[in-house]
Length: 479
Image (cartoon, rainbow, N blue to C red; front, side):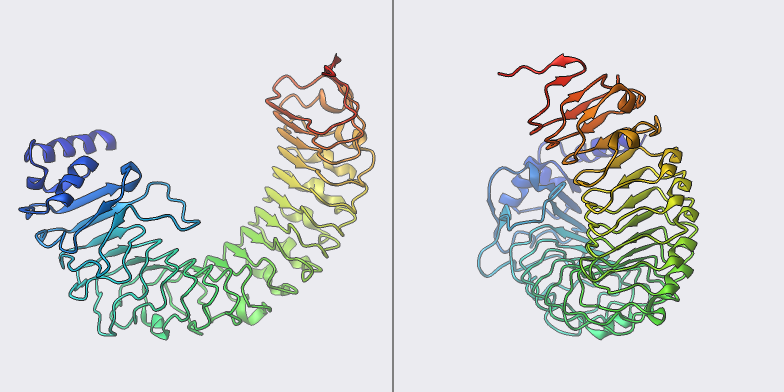
């Protein structure tokens, strides 16, 4: 129904003038827009201009006054559908060295991906702006003075603007709700006036590697998401309100999490700490709304996990991947009745799994890849009724693989045994896995035979299995 209404609206706009796009109120077809940009005369009727730059095959040189006669323009979008911001791709819209000289003050939405100039026009008064999106831009500063009044601005997105040095003062931005500054690698400071944005719900500065100035107090009663990941110069967690639901801290300079800093975040649903912490406070077990806890990349610092995490009634994902000094999981992990994903890949010092792991009846994915110290798995593994993906790749010391695989539940869809010491996969091991669709045995140097492949198998990766001679009782050709 939505698509049908959209088509009807487009037909109405086209009926405004079938021959001359400059006499229409809205433009979205790239050929029409390019025609208007090349000859920006008598375009007073245009109110909205939206161009998917992925449809443009050549560089377009814009004149500085290209928007001078578009005094009714309210929406301007130059965007890349499914943009990839990695690297430094050239903008397809080029401006002279002096930049853009005019933008209509009527603009309410301005989205210009990879904006090619270092600044916006000095005479541009954005008091009507509701949404500003300029990811990947060449901006060095967003508005020159402190007296900018953006009373209607709700969303500001400048992600991947690597030349951005200074952001505007927030005194004149009282209604800001979302601020995205991720990967602005030249940005040094966020003004403390951000504390005045009482309606702010999201602040993302992840990847701002030179950011060292950040407000110490962000107790804004609407705040729900904070991203400080990969900000190594931010060393203190700001004071946050209990309304925060998502908190990213991976690879930041914050070394300690305490009861005082996170114990009050009773609505927190997702916490990503990565390699920043040496330990987690026991009070983490009181965060009853927590659904995702990601400690992945903990490196040598994370040695243990508090037993209190077993008290988290809503936890669905626990990821401790690459915590290379983590020796064990808490006893009582079976109490996490809603847990669906458990990631332990690269935890090379874990020797065993808790015996009650079989009580995780909703567990869908278990990743033990690279757990080189594990020699056996508990018998209760057979009780994992919902297990669909099991990763054992690189668990080189795991013994009795045939005995481990035999009781596995028929729900298993993917099995990764790459790099293990398994020698034989017979019917007693995998024939029962009737739903198995993906089987990986890459680099299993001792594997000689795979018999009776499951009927629903879609993918078999047996690369570099130098001893493998038979699959499903059929000899493998030698040349």
